[in-house]
Image 1 (tube, one colour):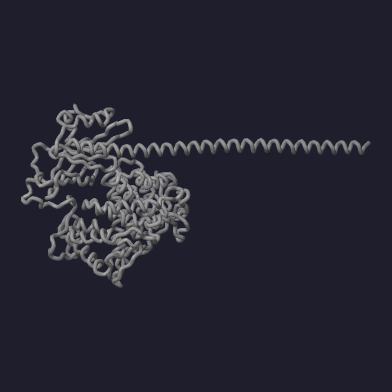
Image 2 (tube, one colour):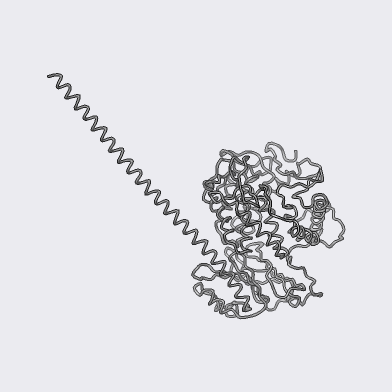
Length: 601
């Protein structure tokens, strides 16, 4: 009997264990089913979000293309009917302003006809200059036809005609007491049959420069027809050939004294270095000055392409013409070697574009277009970022082993201005979109915001995700020009993209709070690794004072603060150069002073 009770108890225990095991299986199964159901829902929602994001990006791209097409058609329509301006006496009295809901067709219909106007399309803006009347900018704001316009300046009816005039009384300037104003520079030469808009710039906030070219009849003040320079109007020119040599050591340190002599000294230095390249390394990428031999690393006559715009600005037109002749006869992009995407973009593509914009030579633009299409194949990483090296003939691309398979911040974030400009010239928004995608990824994946509203970007980036890796942060090698381009992109695009301005100000705040240190009376811009300052400063960092000074001219809210920091860093760079002991150089590249060394020692 006792055995039966024992067996019964044992059986009950087994049954309870079985029930407990079954219950655990049911609970676990329920949990797993719930987990996978939730994960399935999450993935479905993520997929829907990705589809929505893709749709928004696609719609945004379509709208951008449409805006560019509308701006182009508007310009062509205005030129075909010879329209002069929609800013007349009624508008000056507040009666003829364009309403945002009127649309382009209605706006253009009100523009009186005339022949003294020229237009220039820059990104989405159309700039219009009408001699003796006004200069304005306008564009389509959205796909509903809303119209945006800013009058940059109006001519003074009692002013004296001349090659350089100031059109004042423009629209109000945000954040400034004075209205917009534009300096109109008109140059005339033989062979030009109609007024053309060569270039527009904004040297300081709401202070514009419009450079025009026209036939001699528009310049009666010229004593000799056709004596004015061609498309380089407004570009500082070189000293006349045969001018006496200038000794740089005899020049004043003042920024406003002996300007002509200083310009002449610069041109002389350019002639000396260009002459050496021409004699010993013509057609090669660079000259090795000690051995007096040429060397290639891109194989595209890099020094020639990178120097054309400087030769034009210096007035060395014979040297410029020889360089363009080499481009026409010898330059070929059918190269199988793997070359730097970044260096080829900024030096070769940028060089061709700048030379075209200076001279108006269409062949240079055609070559730039060919090169850009080949380079664009590098934007093939899963994240949309460009690979490090590319073959221009095959489109093959790779990441070199020395970076550990990582992309470099400066190399992916310093090609946007070149692709934006080419896209605008050739009406190829798809190229602009590729370059913009890089900034969108960097903006999204950048470092965290600190307590002062600043953030910085590590120099290494994974090509698959676009996410930064490692902790090394530098405004010197491998990081430098990305920070420079945040500001210059904002300026290039007419200050319309707040993204670029925001990223620039965030990076400067991050630099100020984390990388700036002082020692022995000098201010240094250090690097950072693992959250700690590395007490060294690359000579490459010496671009920063100029960038801060440039930004200060357009950002009044930080002008005093940024200029003060720029002056301190510039003094450090001056001391760095003076401390370099090299007989042929005053300033060695990548000079890295130790912060425990007194300045000048």
